[in-house]
Image (cartoon, rainbow, N blue to C red; front, side):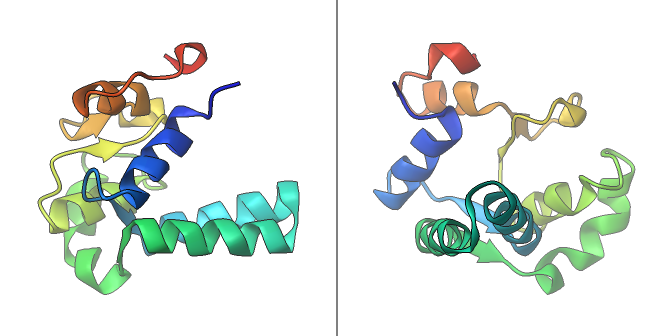
Length: 124
Protein backbone atom coordinates (compact mmCIF):
# COMPACT_ATOMS: atom_id res chain seq x y z
CA UNK A 1 0.00 0.00 0.00
CA UNK A 2 1.33 3.44 -0.96
CA UNK A 3 1.71 6.21 1.56
CA UNK A 4 -0.81 9.04 1.63
CA UNK A 5 -0.17 12.03 -0.62
CA UNK A 6 0.65 14.12 2.45
CA UNK A 7 3.17 11.52 3.62
CA UNK A 8 4.71 11.46 0.12
CA UNK A 9 5.06 15.24 0.24
CA UNK A 10 6.69 15.15 3.67
CA UNK A 11 9.12 12.53 2.41
CA UNK A 12 9.95 14.72 -0.59
CA UNK A 13 10.49 17.69 1.72
CA UNK A 14 12.78 15.61 3.92
CA UNK A 15 14.82 14.83 0.80
CA UNK A 16 14.97 18.58 0.01
CA UNK A 17 13.05 18.14 -3.24
CA UNK A 18 11.22 21.38 -2.44
CA UNK A 19 11.09 23.97 0.33
CA UNK A 20 8.32 23.06 2.75
CA UNK A 21 6.89 25.32 5.41
CA UNK A 22 4.54 24.57 8.28
CA UNK A 23 2.91 26.96 10.70
CA UNK A 24 3.33 26.48 14.41
CA UNK A 25 -0.43 25.98 14.55
CA UNK A 26 -0.27 23.03 12.15
CA UNK A 27 2.38 21.44 14.36
CA UNK A 28 0.02 21.70 17.33
CA UNK A 29 -2.85 20.21 15.31
CA UNK A 30 -0.68 17.34 14.04
CA UNK A 31 0.61 16.58 17.51
CA UNK A 32 -2.93 16.47 18.94
CA UNK A 33 -4.13 14.18 16.17
CA UNK A 34 -1.24 11.71 16.43
CA UNK A 35 -1.38 11.69 20.21
CA UNK A 36 -5.13 10.99 20.22
CA UNK A 37 -4.95 8.30 17.51
CA UNK A 38 -1.49 6.73 17.99
CA UNK A 39 -0.20 7.79 21.40
CA UNK A 40 2.37 10.17 22.82
CA UNK A 41 5.53 8.60 21.37
CA UNK A 42 4.22 8.50 17.81
CA UNK A 43 3.01 12.10 18.17
CA UNK A 44 6.46 13.14 19.37
CA UNK A 45 8.21 11.27 16.54
CA UNK A 46 5.91 12.72 13.86
CA UNK A 47 6.34 16.25 15.21
CA UNK A 48 10.12 15.85 15.18
CA UNK A 49 10.02 14.53 11.60
CA UNK A 50 7.87 17.42 10.37
CA UNK A 51 10.12 19.94 12.13
CA UNK A 52 13.18 18.40 10.47
CA UNK A 53 11.56 18.32 7.02
CA UNK A 54 9.92 21.75 7.10
CA UNK A 55 10.72 25.31 8.09
CA UNK A 56 8.43 26.33 10.95
CA UNK A 57 6.60 29.64 10.66
CA UNK A 58 6.04 31.13 14.11
CA UNK A 59 2.88 33.12 14.86
CA UNK A 60 4.78 36.40 15.13
CA UNK A 61 5.78 36.09 11.47
CA UNK A 62 2.20 35.93 10.20
CA UNK A 63 0.15 37.71 12.87
CA UNK A 64 -0.19 40.96 10.92
CA UNK A 65 -1.64 39.06 7.93
CA UNK A 66 -4.44 37.44 9.94
CA UNK A 67 -7.15 40.05 9.39
CA UNK A 68 -6.67 40.01 5.61
CA UNK A 69 -6.62 36.20 5.60
CA UNK A 70 -9.90 36.09 7.53
CA UNK A 71 -11.57 37.77 4.54
CA UNK A 72 -10.56 34.85 2.31
CA UNK A 73 -10.70 31.85 4.64
CA UNK A 74 -12.71 30.61 7.58
CA UNK A 75 -11.57 31.81 11.00
CA UNK A 76 -10.21 28.33 11.79
CA UNK A 77 -8.12 28.31 8.59
CA UNK A 78 -7.05 31.96 8.44
CA UNK A 79 -3.77 31.40 10.32
CA UNK A 80 -2.64 28.87 7.73
CA UNK A 81 -3.35 31.27 4.88
CA UNK A 82 -1.77 34.17 6.79
CA UNK A 83 1.41 32.14 7.26
CA UNK A 84 1.60 31.43 3.53
CA UNK A 85 0.98 35.08 2.65
CA UNK A 86 3.50 36.37 5.20
CA UNK A 87 6.33 34.55 3.44
CA UNK A 88 4.89 34.88 -0.08
CA UNK A 89 4.62 31.10 -0.32
CA UNK A 90 2.94 30.40 -3.66
CA UNK A 91 1.13 27.19 -2.63
CA UNK A 92 -0.90 26.38 0.45
CA UNK A 93 -1.05 22.58 0.28
CA UNK A 94 -4.08 21.19 2.04
CA UNK A 95 -6.75 18.56 1.54
CA UNK A 96 -9.20 20.89 3.31
CA UNK A 97 -11.80 21.99 0.74
CA UNK A 98 -12.62 24.97 2.96
CA UNK A 99 -9.78 26.69 1.08
CA UNK A 100 -11.81 26.45 -2.16
CA UNK A 101 -11.48 29.81 -3.93
CA UNK A 102 -8.19 30.76 -2.22
CA UNK A 103 -5.69 31.34 -5.03
CA UNK A 104 -2.75 29.81 -3.10
CA UNK A 105 -4.64 26.59 -2.30
CA UNK A 106 -3.62 23.33 -3.95
CA UNK A 107 -4.53 19.77 -3.02
CA UNK A 108 -1.67 17.39 -2.08
CA UNK A 109 -2.26 15.23 -5.18
CA UNK A 110 -2.02 18.26 -7.47
CA UNK A 111 1.12 19.49 -5.73
CA UNK A 112 2.72 16.06 -6.18
CA UNK A 113 1.96 16.32 -9.90
CA UNK A 114 3.49 19.80 -9.94
CA UNK A 115 6.66 18.25 -8.50
CA UNK A 116 6.60 15.56 -11.21
CA UNK A 117 5.56 12.84 -8.75
CA UNK A 118 2.70 10.38 -9.01
CA UNK A 119 -0.09 10.85 -6.44
CA UNK A 120 -1.83 8.06 -4.59
CA UNK A 121 -4.88 7.32 -6.77
CA UNK A 122 -7.13 6.62 -3.76
CA UNK A 123 -6.73 10.26 -2.66
CA UNK A 124 -7.04 12.05 -5.98
